[in-house]
Image (cartoon, rainbow, N blue to C red; front, side):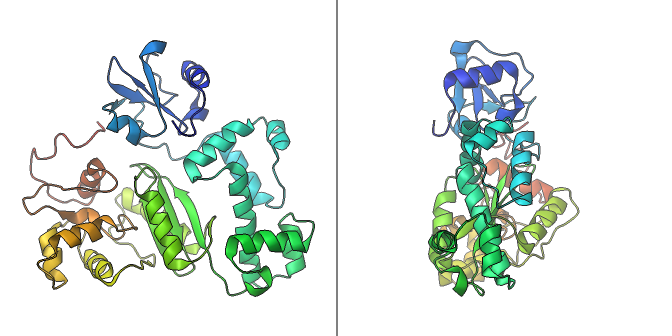
Length: 360
């Protein structure tokens, strides 16, 4: 129940079919076994029959199936309008600190903003704003901007305050950061649910479904491998990734050109590089990958490395199935693996996967 509003607030939002709560919580009905978005147009259930969840995954694990009307496992591709306003304000005026009083003046409840950003971005709204200010500052410094101008542009009244905040985030003071790099993170919507993506100046280093259980662990591995600050924002690689993913899901692209960066153990890298050679529309077994990397006895280790892949779809671990033709596991959920293979035109055994997809 982490980061959920009170039950009274959620019941009120459900009764009003308030779309601004979509993505903050999901409601399930015990008598029907179905879960929905707060904005679902289906007839509202009795209060005592309702259960609330912080993510679709939690509802599925609890035994509920998604509503065919509002399709809570999918995404409409856009955040609520009040979130769009906030994000636009941050990008347009990054130096302006949006206090709780200013948020209320914009007609936005600060508590709701905090919950939404915790849920969607893994940080409070104020932490997100601060991260964006410092991320923009780093980019300006790398492009040769004057430090005094950057300090004022970031909304700091003194250089010492800016220097302290900057060094705490990036590990080096601004005056020594003209060649520094950081990991930019962004939220990318898709027909199969939102992704958390990350990229350095060299390329994409993370693409995970936002509800994946191992996401926090994968972000921790990024910190250890790169030893760089992780801040919200975008760069040319994330922009290119979003465009190519859109083309992929619309059936206009089968191969990706955005550069990838995937540090790991030597064995993991051998497996991941082998995955990159699997063409769209084809599947291979874990045994096939083990043979390809010259380690035919390491099938279990191949499975573990496959599961530790941090860049979904682009490093196509979803194209690896069991030797008997069954799908096997997938970090983003077996139903997503099935959808991805269908999208790519892979031939799946008839009737084999009738029970794996929770979405009608």
